[in-house]
Image (cartoon, rainbow, N blue to C red):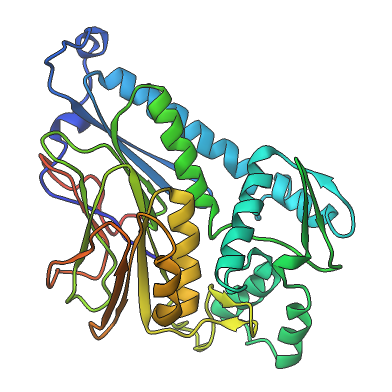
Length: 364
């Protein structure tokens, strides 16, 4: 999933200025102009960003910190890199053995199964062994043999996951492992949104790793957050307006510079090989969980079958964009507007009243 977020050049001189004790201590007036507070946090192997408008910078900062703390907590549950995470423990112990898990992990596996069924098995979190194999190839290792691929394909199949309500999971495979990277960041966004709302924040923009975005409310004086989606052609410039909903983008990893042209991080569970597609795909949906999972799902199935799937989902809109400018769109509510040529093929988010870029696009 690849999106690169650009904040517009009109936004936050005041927000980035040092806060004085007087500002922090002052009680916000009913008619005070909301201030923008922007913070970043590294978690789940990527950078999360939250920009929130509030009359009290201190209040907004505390709320954002609580939202980030929840994301960090979820990383300890969902990480497939940390050996002590709950997911890693399930991957080690869940084969032919029932394992009790937290509500978060159980819910996420249950949600994943919905998208597997919706896509006829194209979306499948049990592809973890294949993903790891092809990631190694992407880094320059030799491409796996057909025999190696077929062996790992035997480990794959969402039907081999048994969910035993309310909190138990069992894998019916001797080599199964799951990877929730295609849905976990969206889920973390939703949890962060819940915390911000509970803290009284009404207007904020949240970004998970520059691939999933959630818009709460709207910036001052606007009806929604304007978001420019991924456009590999630099021609279409698809634009959506987010207000209490989410957008996500998926795209296959670019061809390896080290010679493994077939490598990639999005794997087709039907054949065990990296997906070959000419499209970048973006979707608007009601939640981060839904948009994150559907962005991978519908990139895998393609526009012909994908349009039929979107038509079954309330309040959704989707667009496939190729490098040569070909577009395919479908909607059950939100509008994806084609604004014309933009300067780069990267995602851009425009926030009104910005003073300069919040972050250098080339910053690591």
